[in-house]
Amino acid sequence: MASANTSWSEDNFSCSICLDVFNSPVTTACGHNFCRTCIAKFWDDQVQYNCPVCNELFHTRPDLRVNTLLSEMVDQFRLSVRVKEQPCVEPGEVPCDVCTGTQLKAVKSCLVCLISYCHTHLEPHQRVAGLKKHLLVEPMDRLEDRMCKKHNQLLELFCQTDQVCVCQFCTDGDHRSHPVVPIEEEYEVKTAQLGKMASEVQQMIQERKRKIKEIKDTEDRSKVDADRQIADAEQVLTALMSSIEKWRDDFNQTVKEKLKSTEKQAEDLMKELEQEIEELTNRRSEVKQLSHTEDHLHLLQTFSSLKNPPHTRDWTTVEVRPPSYVGSLRRSLDQLEETLNMERKKLWDELKMVQQYEVDVTLDPDTAHPRLILSEDGKQVHYGGVLKELPDNHKRFTNCIYVVTRQSFSSGRFYFEVQVKNKTTWRLGVARESINRKGFPILTPENGSWNIYFTKDQLVFSDNPAVLLPVRAELQKVGVFVDYDEGLVSFYDVEARVHIYSATGCTIRVPEQTYNSSSV
Image (tube, rainbow, N blue to C red; front, side):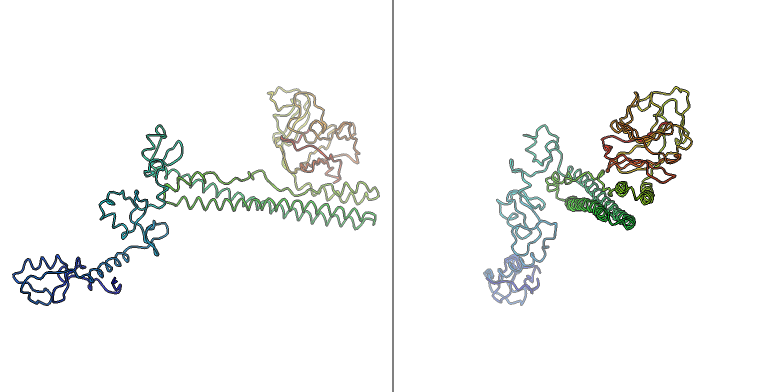
């Protein structure tokens, strides 16, 4: 079969009468070609039969025959022109399912054939009587997924009860009493939800990035603390006798192991956060891609799988606490009586270290016993003697003359100082929130209270049995340090900068808050 030279123009295949591409071309005896209809109409209007091109005269009306070769070439030319005029499929457009090689853009989809067609391959549906009855719609991809499997009808509605796409006939069956809306309407709703989901996922990513920075900062501080502790230990140990060389090595190893444990914890948490960020980033990309699709059905069918973000940990309470070295040197040096002077110098450094955790606290008047008088700023308290009439509440001490602070703590480390100068009798420390406020509580660690008290020139840590503490000089200010993780409560003589007493193994970490308490 002859093929048209695609370099030829339309003029090479144009009828000289109608000036359009040949339609059923025929040839005269003189060799010129015309559309059959054009030459027939031309001769119908003439007395004589002559060629419109060369004007050759024919004695009788010629018997015209179809120019087979030219007809084939015209058909090829028409096809090539249509192909050139049709655009190739672009990303996001529906391709022709019939095209081989370069796929052209589909102009219609047939809901009977479940095939999408370009202009060329759509032609039979416009010509063949049986195909003309098929239902043609705007181009759609994945036609099989767009049809109701039960009724073989286009999915045009969305059931809000079952959250599925349905066809018109479904509303007369299983979804008869369910509220349904056009999928275009539900598409808008889900698109809005996707936008909110994308924003929420982005916020989760930012929160985890901030948590990574927080953990990294804590890790850096831990390294600084570890370096300082090792340096302080070296300063102490170099002045000691060779008999404590082994102790020095053990101390350094303990510090490094604590640091290593903290670093590992930080690294594990950061890896977990990075993994969650990667998963959330992937989910964000999926949500963003889906939110930009104009394919209503695809969005609705995919929405439920993206509605909830990936399973992630709640990071709001997760933190890496740097290891505590408070009292490590002191507890070891206490065993070496001959190094008392070195111990005093070391304890000076310990007080400086715990003071970095100092917090600002004020006394809570709602908890104060009626015989106590508090200053307006809540920084001072003294015994008034007179029993005031105050509103009773569950927080107020009614029998024991105590008061606790407004501020409470449930984790980490904190330090505060109490001025006791010129006080003849006092008690101070920390207590759990559950301390008995209406009866006569025994303030011991067993009952959730760690405190020291001074009376009749005696300083005592309240325990069972009580621990009598040495009084080197008149106490003026007492510092209290609490480390939840270490289970440590320590008391210091701030003016003399010496350690008074430490309670270890304290069961402070309970599902309740801890308050600073005092009494006069």
